[in-house]
Length: 396
Ligand code: HEM
Image 1 (cartoon, rainbow, N blue to C red):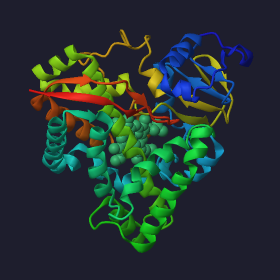
Image 2 (cartoon, rainbow, N blue to C red):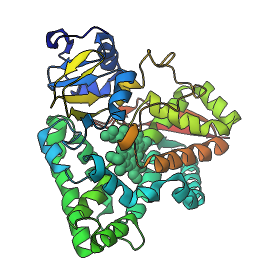
Image 3 (spheres, helix red, strand yellow):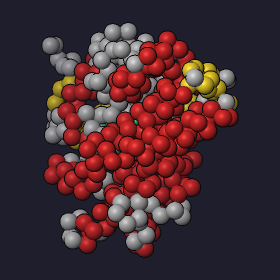
Image 4 (cartoon, rainbow, N blue to C red):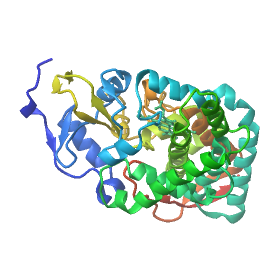
């Protein structure tokens, strides 16, 4: 492969994080993919990776492309996130991840399946009784009931969790209007987490409780308890809400796919992959090159920041046939929406459990899902999710 010189790298001037680009993101990704495997974003001063192969290769090579300098696009968030699993490398990362990730494996989650299925059934039955519903509200129900209990947040303060978690994501893009507007909320979550740890008010037997015990036993520094609790809260709400709401939207707008799912609910696990491929909940995170290297023939000097565009990789025609077609029959298991490699999503078992439970509850009770108005996208730098999704559910 010929090596490019630094001046050969294609550049892209539009702002990927403007309100317009957040609301209509795919045309930007398509132009970036056409430009090449590595594209310099003049506005954000990073190398963007819009194609599947390079995104995957970078995620898998965590010795060269590190997370310890932060995975956000701005220095403030990259400093504030220190001490989290997401923002750490090597043995430090493994130590943090091993404290609680075992609670989120499919086997550890299995005892929750019946309770989550029952909750999903209640959500769908309540929606059927109302007929006209906001799909985003439906999508919030499971994450907001399951995750706070698992992490162990006390009842008091839970009403703020979704706002705080959304703000934590917003703050990891560039410092633009969205990020500044939500900064006070992001700081609110940090203050709350520190207070919960100080007062030891986490629920007995929860993940948060495990962390307090690990600190008591000297396995982790006490100061890390609060950051690690946020580690498992901030990425766990909007992401799953995005996947469930996008599933509702996609099955409303692709009735033939809905028929296929109803005919064979065995397709649900792959349908979850296809939803996460087609409308990836996380737009992008970054990495830093720990040494001079090359990506697809492009020289990447040590210290360069790279933008891994999961949402674009999952629509790359070099990897996927008809990438802009939503089809639950394709093999979507290799989608990158949950990341890949050592930082691959620690909570994907839970996200899959919640999204599948909603789809199981819907296929047996609902004949058709109809869109009754124009959906609106939420304005968030990192999370690609609906803010409003007017729907009607027609009973089976
Ligand atoms: C559909 C839902 C979800 C999506 C699409 C998603 C996506 C992602 C992605 C792309 C990463 C990789 C970040 C990177 O490469 O730097 C990640 C990491 C992570 N996710 Fe998720 N996530 C979801 C749900 C959840 C849930 C429910 C939890 C917790 C209960 C969670 C906890 C985490 C944690 C702790 C990490 C950091 C792992 C590490 O650095 O080792 N996620 N997620």
